[in-house]
View 1 (cartoon, rainbow, N blue to C red):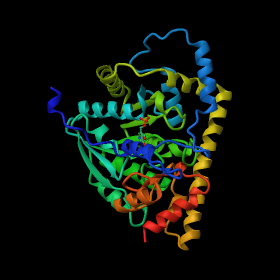
View 2 (tube, protein in one colour):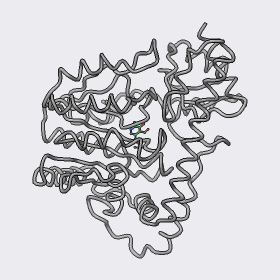
View 3 (cartoon, helix red, strand yellow):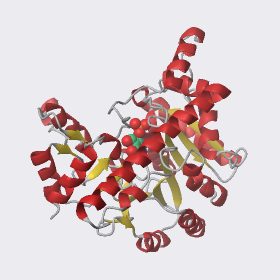
View 4 (cartoon, rainbow, N blue to C red):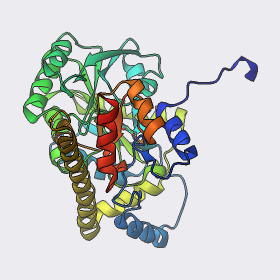
Length: 394
Ligand SMILES: Cc1ncc(COP(=O)(O)O)c(C=O)c1O
């Protein structure tokens, strides 16, 4: 049977990691991966996660199955973190899933059940795995304008002009904060406008929020989702706990469905659970228990919030240092957008050839669309990166 198979196209990000590992140069830089690195270039386990794991080890007295919806305390924690007090009573349910990716997959299948002819609209550009995760059910994929690579800013006019042409049967994927790969986010006023368009046209918003707390703060980064929760009747939200809790490999996320009334929301939730049953049955518990222990304990919660703040301050500081280095070495402010963007990523607006030249001549690795993870650069490498980018872009 396997003779009929051909090799799949390698994953753009994962294949970059492999070629970086094989590069013998000591001063190589890996800006391609989507994980947070501290000032020592390490992806450490947060102290609060370690403490919660210790408690879990002491307290856990059974490893029996937990249920299709996963850990209820985790789902409640995610609801509080993402939606705060704004949740419409009875109209929203969250189901733990394997990571943000697993949450997106469950929601794709839910959309397919609810509306097999739905068209899913992705921003141009978007996270490289969105199309694969969201077209699994055969849902059609469309693209809406978002980022203008010449100005390295959002083309809001083109974006909203496209969104105004959509309606029921269209699903619009929105990045809750810290847009991947561009780092360019809508302002609050712009979110208000887009929420108004969703309400007026009837398209279904699907939020992907994978970096809450990496931008302007835990509450601030949830503005978009909360605004929509207030404004529209139905929405879907995929949450990842991989980044802000630093538990990437534990595979923890949450899929939310918000409906127009409690009855339809309950039916959507029952469908999500039956979808999970047919995909992986039940999600892994370890990371979800860790998150719920942290969130329920006043001391651990405060400590986690301060660890999260250290991460977002580090990101902001690197962005400012990099933008300053560009100004210092070029004399112009073309790369100032790096200081203004939020989250780990920025798109530098380079061509594939320029990206290849950075890899070959300087050992600087980024994805072929010129996305960099700013936490991959430290110390003197900041000036080296800016200098190399300027050298290949003349
Ligand atoms: C925008 C976006 N959504 C979702 C995910 C998925 O995260 P997880 O590792 O929790 O599946 C990522 C991970 O890189 C991401 O960048």
